[in-house]
Length: 344
Image (cartoon, rainbow, N blue to C red; front, side, top):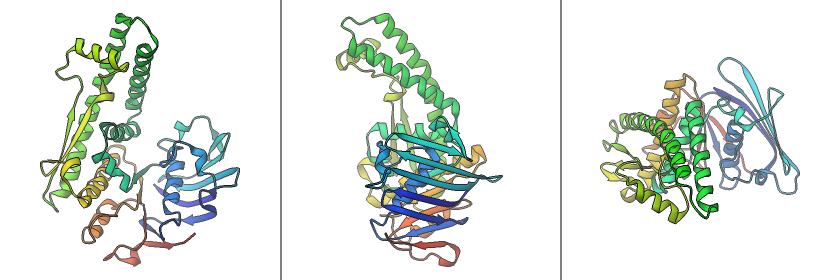
C-alpha cells in the first residue's frame, strides 16, 4: 500500500500544502512547530476518519476559516484510489473515489496505517485502559468479528451502568442477565487478546534476542479470576458501575523481568513503544497479506543514535514509511530516502 499525494487546505497551520511521497522511506525534516505532526495526523485522518490528536474534530480547521479539506491518493497494490474529507463546524463529508460514504467506519481497512509516536509510552506507563485500548484498536482492525463483540460488550456495560445510576431499587435478575452477557462476550474477547499478545511478545523478542538480549513478557490478568460474585455485586452497587468483564482486565508488560512501567529508562520505553507498534504491523502483514503505511512521528526521540539506524531499517522493511524529525538521523544513507525539508 502506497500513498502518493496529500493535499491539505486550511488544515491547522497550513493554508495549502501539497506533498508527494515515494515508495520506501520518506523523511519530513523541519523545526519544531513547522507542522510535521499535522501532516501525520492528516494521513491518519483519511485512514480512520478520526483525529489522533483531539476528539473535537473542528480543531483541525485553520483559525479564521470555515472549511478544511484533506485529499489523499494511494495505491492498494491493485488500483489507485482517492479519499477526500471535507470538514466544517456542522460536520464532515467523506468521498471514496468521488462517491460519498455514509458512515466513518466505512473508511476502515481502505487505507491501512500504523502510527508510532512518543505518546506510545502511555501503553507502558499509563493505566490499564491504555493497554486495553492498544489491543482493542489493533484487534478491531484485524477482525470485524472482534469489533462486533467489543461493541456488544460496551453496549451491555452501558445498560448495566445506567441501571445502577438511575434505579432506586435494583433488579437483581436484570443485573444477572447483564452479567451473563458481559461474561459471554468477555470470554471471546479475552481469548483473542491472549492470542495476539503471545504473537506480539514472540515478534518483539525475535528482535531483542539479536540486540539487547533483554526480553519482553506480556501477562494478561482477567478480572474473572478468583472472583466472589456477591462481593462484585456489592462493589458495583457501591460505585454504581460495572466492575467485572474484559473492560476491566489488565495487561502487565515486563522487560528483562522487571515491570516496564516501574523500572525502565526513557530510551528503553521509547524502544519498546516503537517495537509494540512494529509488531502490530508485522502481524497485520502476516495475517491479512496487506501492507500498511508506517507513520513515525518523532518516534526516534530518546532512542540512542547507534540504535536508530538498525531500528529504522528493521521496522521500515518492505513498507512505505513517513518519518518526521527535526534533524536527519546520523549514519543513514540519504541517497536511499526521500528527503523533504520545509518550514512554515
